[in-house]
Length: 306
Image 1 (spheres, helix red, strand yellow):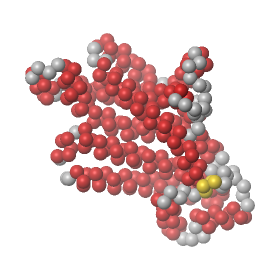
Image 2 (cartoon, rainbow, N blue to C red):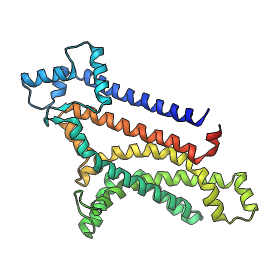
Image 3 (cartoon, rainbow, N blue to C red):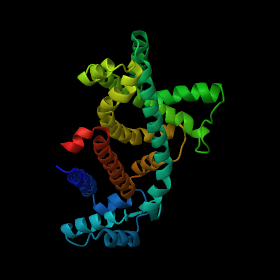
Image 4 (spheres, helix red, strand yellow):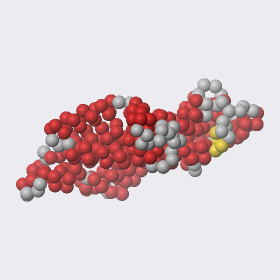
């Protein structure tokens, strides 16, 4: 299989997954108890004019197949409907809060990856490995919101080093990002360390040592690249987990973002916003996992030749 064919296959697979997610969300809307118009209105004002507007917008007076095709067509063009509770297009509601959530998730992912690389490389001695493994187990087993509360209590309430809430400046991003990054670093460190252990026992590592390379050079120049494959797989999956965890962490730290929007939409039964968040989350997940699949071709040249 050529490189172009491999890339094309992964892109097509991602589009199929995205279509399935959008379809599942649409069917869930239709399957909600009661009338579809009632589900779309939610707790907003329910007037004959608004009901007629919903029927016209969603094409509820047309055959079901036409409604579904029209929904997919509008979704592909970024038209996610209208929130009749907020009286605003869903695209504007979600778009305004997308960047704060992505900023938090990206910062947490970058910090988690850097921490895992440093820990996996630096904790090669038995005593350091035991200490690091114990800390990783504690972090992975602790709910992120509890980590956030502890960090708030120590660094905000007691020491006053970081703001308690809000989204102003770099300082307000530190504690939420660390809260999300620590469990991610715990998982990735364990995977990287196991991968390094296996790679250092491979024949290529023995050959590199026989050529006079120092152990650090063998570790960084040869073993690390082989250990990255499973970590790359997890990174795409864990970033999706970060977006889900951001819903809770944004509430703990009082940050704006999709978490606040989703919580408000679910509480008020604002189904168009909920449906948009589902489709958007699926799109982000598909993009990240497709990027992770393509990263395999960069990390491991053998996959480009297979």
